[in-house]
Length: 111
Length: 140
Image (cartoon, rainbow over all chains, first blue to last red; front, side, top):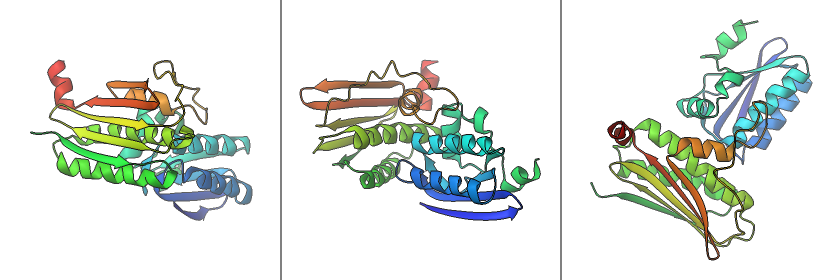
C-alpha cells in the first residue's frame, strides 16, 4: 500500500494510506507513523479517505500510532474514513477511542 | 432466486487474500440484492478468518473458501488442512481499548449471526453466516 505524507502545518504530519490496510500493509504504515513522529513531531493525522478496506491488523496499527503519538506528547487523529472503515470502527467501538473527523481540514483546525 | 456461489481455492499466503476480496465482488455481482451494510460486515468477517488461516495455518497445503448468497443470508465455509486451529470462537472477548491486537475473533463474531469452528478429521472447518437485513426484520 502507498502512503502519501504531507506537512501542511508546523509540527503536524498528515499521512494518507491508499488501498487495503490489512495484515500485509499494516507494518509499513506502523513504520511510517513512527518515522513521522520522530521526524516531524507527535501530531499525526491519518487521512482514511483512500483506505478502501481495513481489518483488525490495520485497526491495531492505528491504535499503536495513537499510543506512540501520545507517548511523544502529541496525539493521533483520523479523518474522512470511508464507509467500510466506519463500519469496522463501529463494530469494534474504536470510533470512541479514535473519534473520526469528517475531513482533514477539520482535524487540523481543532487544537 | 437460486443461490449465488463463488469459490476460492488455495488461499494460503498473504498475496492470495486479494483473491478473496475479488471473489466477494463477484458474489455481489451475482447477488445484487444483498444490502451494502450486510456486504461490508460479511466481508470483514470472511477476511478475518481467511487471514487467520494464512497466519496460523502452519502446515496447510490446501484450503477452500465457499461463499454463498441466498434471499435470506450470506454464508461462507472455509476449510483448510493445516494445524488444528485451537480456538474457542465463543470465548474470545474484546481486548482493552488501547490493545494493539486481539480484535480479529470478536470482530468476526460481532459481524455474524453464526460463527463456528470444528475439526473434521484432519480439516479445520469454519462456518460463517450473516442473515440479511430483510430476514432480520422478518424475525423481529
